[in-house]
Image (cartoon, rainbow, N blue to C red; front, side, top):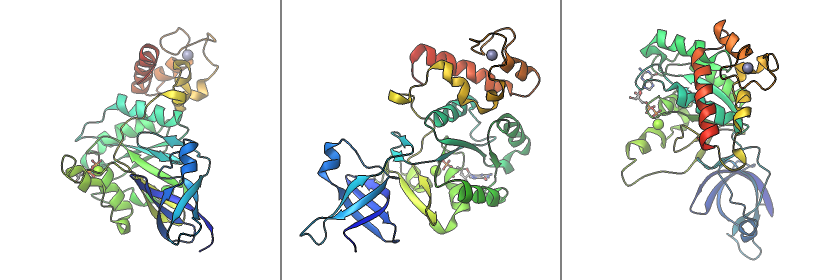
Length: 299
Ligand SMILES: Nc1nc2c(ncn2[C@@H]2O[C@H](COP(=O)(O)OP(=O)(O)O)[C@@H](O)[C@H]2O)c(=O)[nH]1
Ligand SMILES: [Mg+2]
Ligand SMILES: [Zn+2]
């Protein structure tokens, strides 16, 4: 082994990191004190260099964390480029407000949002309704892990358009089942198993990246159904508009230049809702999130 090798952290627990090196080997190591001094905490997903400590055969240390493209604190993971918001037509019923908050916060974290409507076999009409709402602004995949429909095209998108992706959404929407249907060879242990033992001994809180193709990973996370708008990620209400992709083409088309798109006369967004170009639920949730941002400065 050379003195310095590079790789990606695929898991970190209690200061011990598992790094998948560029040569395909997996090593365990700790972080160097210098990173702590710089207040850099390595995260799963980080691209790092690992150095052998002089005079110590086994002492491998992470000595450098490359600049992050994206960073989330809950779940703690770096360099995720795409988050799939997973919803399903029933069992559990979709919570559109929670979904729209999640989508806005993903966008605000500079991560690409996409939608998966899972369990479509349970209600085709319910899946169609959700598709109509979200396909106006997002890439939407309608899947069924039961029948296998939509699985191949989702797998193709993940392989071609993402490097590190993660699934988010309420418990029970079918995330773990879907990951297994997509990548059976990964035999993801963490998902449903650890959720079942959530109150048991084996509570898993860590993020793990599973390599499913060369340089491509799917992140299994303890689960998140929303991100936080805090710190530098705080979103001023006036910028919420840009977190709703299907609103964007109406930018600058409203009668008043300071239009908040809540209820003004001559608002191009509200007109688009009237014409069926924007779903009413999306606009209602825009209003709800806007008010919440204004009043609490946080979700
Ligand atoms: N009908 C149907 N049920 C599904 C499908 N995918 C998952 N389920 C069921 O939904 C429940 C929750 O699935 P799970 O993958 O654990 O959801 P998670 O909490 O999001 O990881 C389980 O009982 C699954 O058997 C699907 O495509 N169709
Ligand atoms: Mg699960
Ligand atoms: Zn407007």
